[in-house]
Length: 114
Image (tube, rainbow, N blue to C red):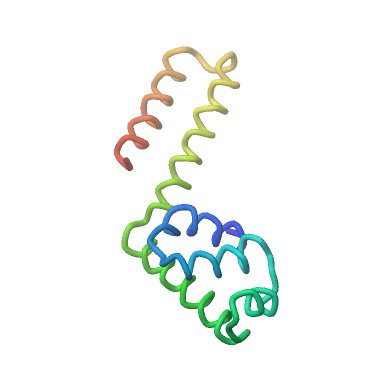
């Protein structure tokens, strides 16, 4: 997974668990692409302080993912829904029983993950 996408997904799922100060810095640097200097100047802290905060936030978000696996579950369900979508496009080539069996199996996997 591309680093930016990974960071955005982690933030989407776990960002509310950060403090307001951590969220602001992480959003500005990672999501809004401000430089460390720009954020440091606005907040009145050092560039190193901003850098350390971003690294700490990323570690916190990764730790939450390591325990809860919400991003991994989301990616898995997304993949399976895409698979179902592709099956519906291919339904003319498959017989109805085979299609129904495959859709049922995939939907069962999704429900098991949730």
